[in-house]
Length: 276
Image 1: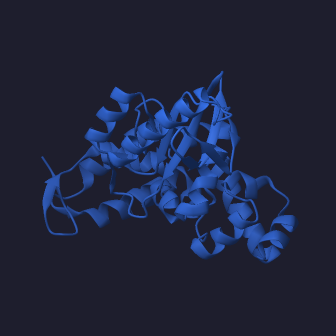
Image 2: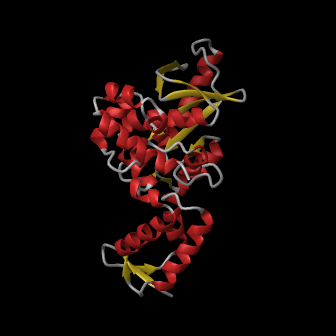
């Protein structure tokens, strides 16, 4: 068994699944990701440092997906967004891509108090309020507190609707976060029927798969779009890579304050990411 050496000097077994996952996060197809992950595992020396593995992954990914040069890792791209309003706007856009009708700027009256929620979304006759949680450090876990708070808000809003204070009948809550969920958070959400979308949870409908299914990548997926540029673009209503790839570059440049040349360069890179 081969091992890798982490930044802190500790060793752990080489995990081919993680290599494959990183390749997929860079936009490499499933078949190529399987093949490249196997080739990397066979070729690297025992004890190789993790940063060397990452460089090798990126180098090999370019051979089948040249657009890798124009994009950053999806998890990092999400972490580059500011919690408010960037990530909230991104989540609302993602839900719309998946068929939800989304309302923003919502303050709902419960039986005992008023609650400002990040969105109210409805689909197939079910109405939920959405709470968005963002961590800059994407290796952090989202824990139990968010679920417990959401459960209390659901109860208060439902009682508020029955008493005539809340004009909207709320069926439940959905918490969306850019990180993994603790096992305690998962158990509580399942027990209390609180919807949760995390980076890799639930397995068949998580943040990563929802983004990839619709290619709703955040605009920060494009290399060179750091916080200063993304802040301008999002203020101009450009949240996703699709919007800048296929939008009116002159209008985006005007509204964001970026030069037309820079806007066209970002749009070109975004199209390279989105198109085969």
